[in-house]
Image (tube, rainbow, N blue to C red; front, side):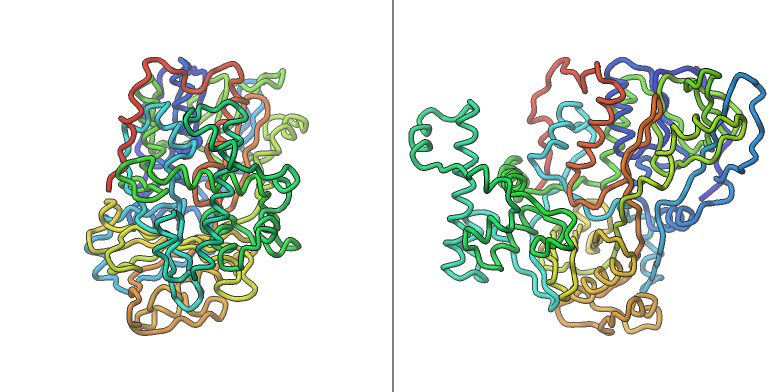
Length: 570
C-alpha cells in the first residue's frame, strides 16, 4: 500500500473513548458510545473502512493480505523502545501481528481481470449473510444505521455433494412439495417435524403471554404439543433420530437450516454438539426470516457493495453523533499508565499523546514487554493482548467466474455437510455466490466465497479444494498447479460441461480470536467462522455492556418507521 500521509496533530487530545480499527465490532461500539453522548476518536491505519470486515478491490485485497500475512517491519515496535520522558509514566508497547497465513493467490485470466480489477469488492470476512429476522437487523434498525445500507436477497439455498450435484433446500411448505429429490414419505416426514416445531413454538409463546391472535388460541391449545424439557436438553441429532427422520432429512435440518458447523453424528470429534433447544431456536429464526421483507425471496440478505458496507454504516451513524474519524494514520500505539497503574492514554507513532478514559483495540494489536517500567504486574494485567486468545482458525477461499453455479440464479448459498465431500470431512463447508447485481463485481461475473473452520490449515485447504473441484472447472494452464498440488487434491483440468471456469482464486487462513478486557482497555473479536452475524453482534453487545454497564445501547429518541429500514431489493 502507498505510504501514509503526514497528518497534523489531532485536536482535541482528550476523549471518553479512543477506538483503533474500523472493523464491525469497533464501529458498532463507536456508534453506540457516540449516540450516548460520549466523545469518541476513531482511528484506522488503513485508507478504507472495515478492517477485517472490509470489502476491497482485487489490488487492495492482494496488498492487504500480502502485507498482513507476515508482520511488517515498520509495524513492529522494538523491545527496547525509548523510555518515557515522564518518570511517573509506565509504557507498554503494542505490535501489530498477523491474523492471516498460508495465502495462495492464482490468476488464470490475468488480462481480463486486469481490465476490471478495481470493479470488484471482495469480502475479507468470507461467506456471510444476514438472516432477515436476526438481532443484527434489529440493531441496525434501532441504531438507524440501516439508512446507510441496502440489501439484496439470496435467491436460493442448496445442499451439495462431492459429485457436483446441488439439491435445493426445502425450507417451506411450498418448497417441500415442489422438491423432486424427496419421496412422498420423506416430504410427509419433514412436514410433520416442522409442524411439531411450530406447535412447540406457539405453545411456548402462548404460555409466556406473547400476543397471539385470540381467534387461534383455542385451536393452538388443542393441537400444539410442546417438546419435553428432557428432549430440549438432549443433542438435536438424537432428537431428530427419535423423530425417526431419515439421514437425508436430518442432514437438511442440521446443516442447511439449523446451520450446524461440526459433524453432529460424531460426538467424539465434534466440539459443538447442538442441543435441541438451540436447534429449535435456529429453525424458528430461519422460518421467521422467510417473508419478513417483501423483496427478499428467502431467509437471507446480503449488503449491496459488500460486507464492508456494514461497518461503514455504523461509522456514518457515529460521525453524525459527533465521533471524530482519522484514517490512513500511522498508529503503532504505546499504552501509557500513571504511577498508580491506571490507564492514561496512547502515544502514536508521530509522538503525539492522546488521552481517554477507555480504549478499544483492533484484534491484531498485541503487546510486547513493558520497556519503561519493570512492573511485571502491570504487564500481566494485559496478557489478553497476546495470541493466547486464539481458539482455532477458519480457512477461506474466493473464486471469480464468468458464469453462475446455477443458471439464472446470481446469488445463492451452498452447504456441504460433514462427510459429503469425503468420509473424513468433519466440518461444514459454506459456499456463497454473489453476482454483479449486488454491485460487487462487473455484470456477467460472479464471486464465490468458501469457508471451513479447522484446527489444521492443511485439512481446511483440502476441504475447500474438494468443494472447488465439485463446483468449478479449472483452466488448462500451468498456473492451476498452484492450487491443484495442495494436499494431493486433483482438480479436473479443462472446461467441464455445466461448470463455471475459474478465472482467479485466493485461499488463506484467518485466526479466530476471542475478546479480552482489563480495566479500561478492551480488545475486539475477529470475524468468526459462522455464516451469519449473530455471534459477532452478541459478543459486541456484551463488550459494550461491560465497558458501559449503566448506558443504554442506542436509546430510542424519535423512533422511525421500521419499514424505512426494510430495503432489501429483489
